[in-house]
Image 1: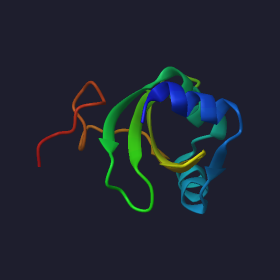
Image 2: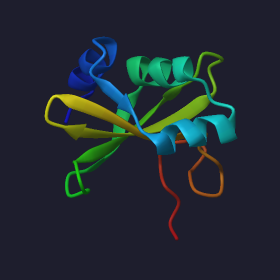
Image 3: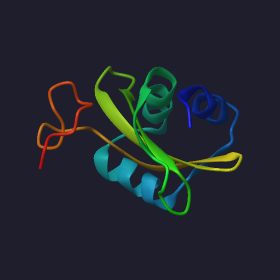
Image 4: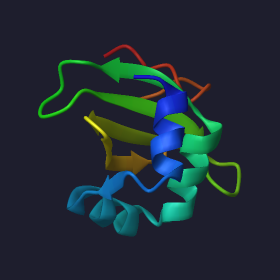
Length: 103
């Protein structure tokens, strides 16, 4: 999975917004445009090739106001599944907002 493929699929409407991501966006005050911006300007920081039902990854980027945001994306054939999005916090991530803290 690479960011160029993800961006292409996202920008060409080959995405499905899961019910989970839509609920989480609403709860967290994140807009769809913020997710698109993060994907188009971010980078993959973690890959989960064994995720079920599709391999997935974690994209780190920024929202439209330049705040850090993470997006979890699954890739099922020719469809991109937007799974969740959240604002990284200092409890789980280092100051760079991309490095997970040790448990």
